Image (cartoon, rainbow, N blue to C red; front, side):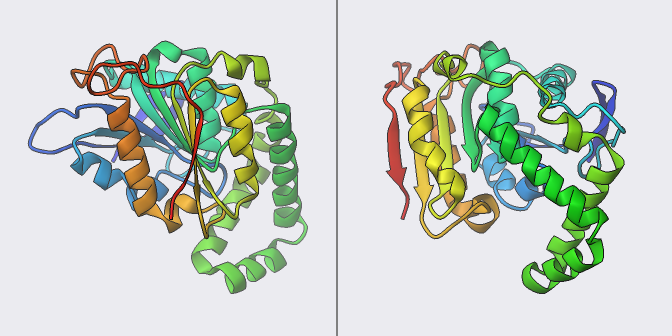
Length: 292
């Protein structure tokens, strides 16, 4: 475990590699979701397999989450995007990286790729969407519900969660309630420059979007394919929002294949301008895949 200063916040960072002193062929940066999530959702699912496959794996707790610092303010989406850029600088990671974002982590990934496409080789998001006006409305509604339940009906809400979702989920919900009550995240996170469809049409980084086939977010798949020049969507039957933790083997295989497809020819350096391992430009064809 490492605690380092990133953009004025003490950030909890974990890094895994192939071992034996060998450098990773490519770097993947794993970004977790909002409120109840932390880097643990990767550490105990796909991160070790990524490292074993020869990748340099970087994961961190967002500000206010996990073991990272929790300032009272500074939770606009653009601050999370700033944190990602500052972390890459702080770790002196060479070459473009592959961003893997779960839920809100995918939203941050989209934001960073739009800001710094030169530093992004590819994007893989799980149950996520860009920061559009629709996203802002949904997130604002979610945060308001959490704020209300954790201030007005906290005991009843936690008892219900414990009975129906288990004690671990109830503990995560309690921590999420503290984050919403004690910081300005609910008011600030959507106070940002939202993404337009025209901006998304200009995003030339390859994007893999994975959704649970039973999730409300799966309706994003055809919309993303219609906008992004190079987008592949995958629907995983029998799953809702928790695809990463419920089907880690499928997520692992999908992301490893995606990174291999969009790796730089030499493994490092100028990566990801649509090139695969053979150096040829990858096809810019939107595709939907159903994973059994």
